[in-house]
Amino acid sequence: MSDRDRTLSKVPAVTLGFWTIKILATTLGETGGDTVTMTLNWGYLAGSALFIAVLVALIVLQIRAKRFYPFLYWATIVASTTAGTTMADFADRSLGIGYAGGASALLAAVLLVLGLWYWSEKTVSVDTVNTPKVEAFYWATITFSQTLGTALGDWMADDTGLGYLGGAGVFSVGLLVVAVLYYRTKLSRAGLFWAAFILTRPLGATVGDFLDKPHGDGGLALSRPLASLVIAALVILGVVLLPQKAGSHPGANPKRA
Image 1 (cartoon, helix red, strand yellow):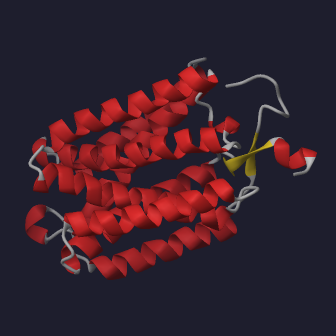
Image 2 (tube, rainbow, N blue to C red):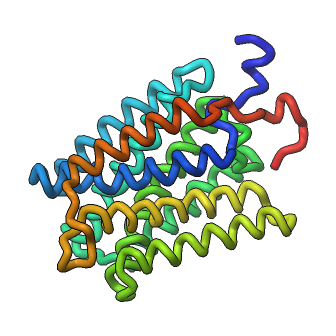
């Protein structure tokens, strides 16, 4: 590995393009997961097993990769958000935990993984993701946060009575607040990143549900497979057209976020 590779993280630099693709990917995770579990009638358990297997395989490839590969990274993100959709639906609906119970348990899991990551590395900054151990923490955090986001989106849209667009509005405002805190305060950059990362998932979930849920439930009743194909095409366009480069690693800058 060259000296330059050692100074780069295995994940992309966090830019506006990153957040644009992330929101599209989370929306695809919702419509794609629903396509398999509902439209194709696989059910939540079988759908979860399928997407977890794909996710594990992609995480292994991501960890074994020597550097940042945009398409591999975003394929892994899509797999994590799709697996998160089916796992959250399985826990909330098939196991009867409910949206609030599922969200609480998953929030505890996210905080636990972040706590273990910080205890091990003294940072949870994404700029440090270039070793197998840190990558394992990173992808575990992402998987739990994607699943948490699905439960939060369903809870906000269904249990509060706000509906899909109302829920999307709430999470959009939350992201705006995080952005203001980022630019106007000195709060932890890493903490704000993970807050934004979590909030983009329920935003995508509510938008995805709005697109494919029946009119009677407040959705547009669009074809789930068609919506998934269109959003997948937008994700691919985003990866191709928007700047994609690896983030800086503390090896290049000794100050950690």
